[in-house]
Image (cartoon, rainbow, N blue to C red; front, side, top):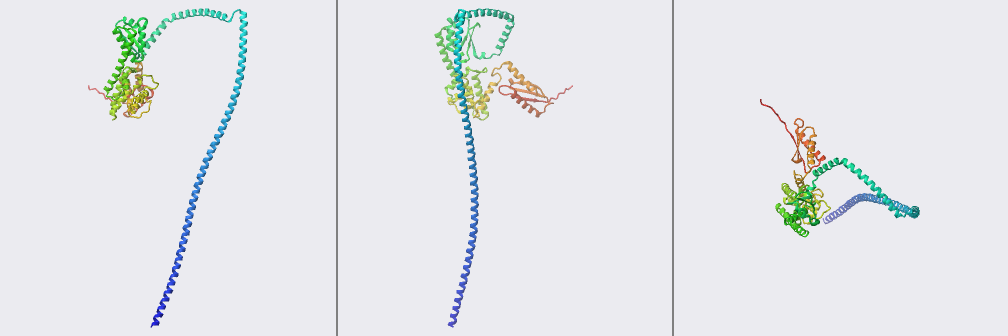
Amino acid sequence: MTGIIIASVCAAGVGYIIGYTLYKTALKKRCEGILKKAEEEAEVIKKNKLLEVKEKFLNKKAELEKEVAARNQKIQQAENKLKQREISLNQQQQDLQRKKAETETIKSNLEAQLTIVDKKQEELDHLQTQEREKLEAISGLTVEEAKERLVESLKEEAKTQAASYINDIMDEAKMTANKEAKRIVIQSIQRVATETAIENSVTVFHIDSDEVKGRIIGREGRNIRALEAATGVEIVVDDTPEAIVLSAFDPVRREIARLALHQLVTDGRIHPARIEEVVAKVKKQVEEEVIETGKRTTIDLGVHGLHPELIRIIGKMKYRSSYGQNLLQHARETANLCAVMASELGLNPKKAKRAGLLHDIGKVPDEEPELPHAIYGAKLAEKFKEKPDICNAIGAHHDEMEMTSLLAPIVQICDAISGARPGARREIVEAYIKRLNDLEQLAMSYPGVTKTYAIQAGRELRVIVGADKIDDKQTESLSNEIAKKIQDEMTYPGQVKITVIRETRAVSFAK
């Protein structure tokens, strides 16, 4: 029994050993298969990676070759430019050398010619001396004596010819005297009719009697000379009864001369020392009045914080005019218009009023600048610490400076409105009438227009058209065409409003 058990155990152990050996062999084969498969996959991955690396390398190589080619091309272009510049410089150097050689040749030729000219001049002087000596020997007269005789003979001949010429002129003048007199009278009438500068450059000072004229003139004219020297005004004392004319382009000087004359005539003491004293006193009074006018103007308009020098300049505007329009009145009008327009646009009306008041300060300078008055006014405002938008509005109101704020176009428009309103500035009557006639005739040239009326001193043109010739849509295009033609062909201040009127009337009669 025991043997059987041992045999069974031994058989089981041998079976186990054999199974284990077989399992180990199978496991080893499996592991070798897995390793082999892994090696194959690794080899494939390796080949793929090598191919990717090779492809990237080729791409990089191609890009580098392109960059190298581009750089080589740029280098080649630069080399070509340098070669061209070198060729050009060589050519210029050759031209300079050639011109230098030509200049040297010309210089040497000129020096040779100058030497020849000097020799010829010496020979000519020698010949002239010999000829003069021969003439003096033949005539028995020296050069000075011959000159004197020639001058005397020419004087006598000139006197004779002058007398004859004067007689001819007098005879001709007698024949044409009537015609010439008419021409002079007509020219005088035309000059008086068209000249307007005289109204802005003279002041007439009225006196009670002509006795005062002699006292103003003084002994040998010393009083009038002292007055002219002290005031810088030309004083014209002529045959005009009870009047003396003060002539000067500067209204302030004329006002000082007028007030000084008034005080001197009222006082009765007129002599050079008294004249200088009165003129000095009047100058001080006028200066005080100028400052007071400036202060009163700024207070009336509600403009505060101005530099004292700007206030003085505003006061000086009272004595200036532009095209017959008082400059201070123009500035006040412009300031008020600017404030109203700025309020309508939702802007600061105080700033607009300030810019409008100061826009023409460049017209009253203490010294004469070379700049336009708008630019000079902007520089003055900047000098006296005004804000940049105010300075820009002053400098740009005649488009001489770029507009950088909304105040600038407002000041420009209000300046044009104040200057262009009816009656603001003087215009020669003939030119004014001609402009209005041209305005009406221009509109009448369009088909369908029956009547035209220029109203509001030429600020508005009313055009009446036939209802059977133009419909409602065509009226709008007609007004645009007329406006464009006026802009292209005519010169006018401000703007012109074109109103086209079309109406249909039905008329019947009850009997």
